[in-house]
Every structure is written in structure tokens, then in C-alpha cells.
Image 1 (cartoon, rainbow, N blue to C red):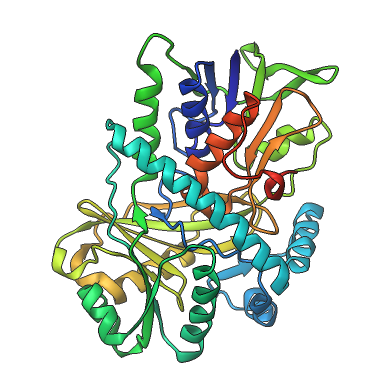
Image 2: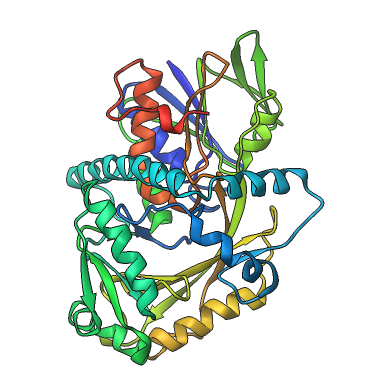
Amino acid sequence: MHVIVVGAGVVGMTTAWFLHRAGHRVTVIDAASGPGLGTSRANGAQLSYSYVAPLAAPEVLPALPKYLFDRNSPMRFRPALDPEQWRWGLEFLLACTAGRAAATTRALLALAFHSRAQVHEAVAEGGLDFAYSRTGKLVVYSDDAGLEGAKRQMEFQRTLGCEQEVLDRAGCLAIEPAVEQFGPRIVGGIYTPSEEAGDCHLFCIALEGKLKAGNNPAEFRYGLPAERLVRDGSRIRGVATRDGMIEGDAVVLAAGMGARRLAAGLGIRLPIYPLKGYSLSLQVTDPAKVPQVSVTDSDRKIVYARLGNMLRAAGVADLVGEDLTLDPARLGQVERETREAFGAGVDFSDPQPWCGLRPATPTGLPILGRTRYDNLLLNCGHGALGFTLSMGAAQLVADLLDNRPTAIPLDPYSL
């Protein structure tokens, strides 16, 4: 079967990988000049299998005024004359219930654990060089109330298979001495030894190398935007581009925010809206003052991941539409937090700034599975968890296309 994958980010590349392994002829289409150059380019780099609790939760509601009026808030909302923004926002607020958040957490953990198994299998096979590490993750808290809330979440997740431990300040320093630079504001933390990190862009490049090898190499059509999906009755005939139509037996839509536009052309609404995030990639100058363990500052909402001789600092979530402008104020916010936390160990002379649009659904659940068109499948809407969930989601979609039983039920993720 010839399968067209629209999108060469980490979700599209992992989808192509599993389809290729199943013996299909695969063509990947992307407007960029290579793999992983959009939202996958310089994300937070954490593979956070146990930290998937959705953004839509009851505690978000009392914080709404801060999100609306505080420019330095970790999450910021800029109202626009965009009906989709307001519709997504309303759906997000409706999802901010304890019951909905708990159900979403269960579904996301199941998918994340499945994804972890696929990552481990792929790494064991060899040939994937992406600054991968399995050093765990430490989430630090600056107040007792935040730590107590994290403990409650940890106890809930323990019933779902997570292995985590609560640490006091001394315990945090024992796990990762570099966090001493945070100063006295750390009251404790949650440590998860099973968490991992890696360079998502390098991961995409490594997958591309594997996909080009062998007797059935995948074809990559870079620099070629998908203009629309061409339907023929109840099926999709192919993908229209400026170079003509690329025909296939099946199409998987894995194009991040681009998936929304392409689906809309078929009368399918994908409830996806971009959460704009920022990152800095900094060269390490003093390894003793930079963490080996992935660190998340819960209060400031900044994540830090060590990638070889580089430290990736990432954070903030702006609902500002499909705006890829680098906002100096938001970059400055990430830089200030990084200087305060680990500034003594990195070089700020060439910070490599980046921003990307995380394609998020109101509930936080990705959209996986079939559509009303027999041969069109969806793999989109992963939000900030694209790297974490990509391998598991791709494997499920590939199995679904071939009518094989899926490892976990797909109902929670269906459109």
C-alpha cells in the first residue's frame, strides 16, 4: 500500500517509521526543507511519560485573571477576532473539571507508557543518535501548597502505574546538586527516575536516515506544501500540491497546526489551537553547575534538559494565534529564569532562540484514528507532548491502518 504522510515533524516521522516497518511504500510531504524543522525543532526535549496531566484542570479557573492581564504569566491569552480561538477557549474551560482532568490523565498515561515502550525498543535496535538520556526528572516547588497538590497528583498516578517519590529540599539537592542555585525558594520536589530526554530534531533526522535505507526507501517531498486533500467519494484520492497531485492508497494527516486547515477543506473540524512556546539552547561551560537530571521549575513553568554539551531551557504558553514572531519579552523571560537557575554554567553569547506552535486540543488528548473518509487517518493535536507521545501514537495509527488490534483502546483519542 502507498501511504502519504502529511507532515515531517516528530509525529509525521514516527508515523512514517511504523508504516515503513509494516512494509508500506511511504511518501512524506512537508513545506519545510527537512525533517523536524517546525514545532519539533527546539522543544523542551523532555520525554515526560509520567507528567502528562492536562492543562485543562480546575486549578486553572482561579488563575484566569493572571493569564489575561499579567504579561509575565507563564500562560498568556491575547484575545483576537478569531471565532476558532473563542470556541476552543470555551471548550477548554468546559474541560476544566476534576472528572474530565482525571479521565484525560488516565488516557494520556496509557498512551505515554505505550510510547515509552516503543522508544526503548527503537533505541535498543541502534542507529538513533539524538542525545538520548535516561537520567530521570525532578520537578521542584517553591511553596508548600504547590508541593501538597503535587503529592495528591502523585498518589493518583501511583494507582495508574507511575513510580515517583516526594523529596524535601535536601533530597532534591542530593538528586541534582545543580538546583542549589535556585536558592532557598525550593521547598521540595517530585522525582521520577523513569523520565528521559533527547533532541527531538536529531531524532527526526535519525528516523529519516533509517527510512531512506533498505530495499523500500521512503520518499521525502520537502519544500512542498500540501495545498488540499482531494476526495473521490468516500475516499481521499491524494494530496494536491503546486507540483500536481500525489496519489496514494491512504493518507495520514500528521501536520501539526496545518492539519486543521487541510481537514477543514473536507468539512472536518479539528479542535486544535496553537499554544506558542519558546526555548533557548545554550552551550554548557561548567558541567557541575548545569543539571544532568531534567529539571522543571513548577512555579516559573520553565523546563531544563541536558542535551550533551547543551542545555535546553523552554517554557511559556501563549494563545496568540498562528504567530511565529519571536517576542523579545517572552524570550527575555526564559533567559532571566535560566540565568537565575543555571546561568553560572552556560554561555549566553549565542543563545539560539526559538519559538513553536504546539497544536493543542481543549482536553489535552491527541486526535488519533479514522475519519468519515475510509482511507484518511489522523495523528494530530498532541500539544506540548508531541515528542513524548509520538512513538506510541504512530504505532497505534499504523496498526489501525492495517486493521491490526491496537495495544490500547483508541476510543479516548477518536475525533
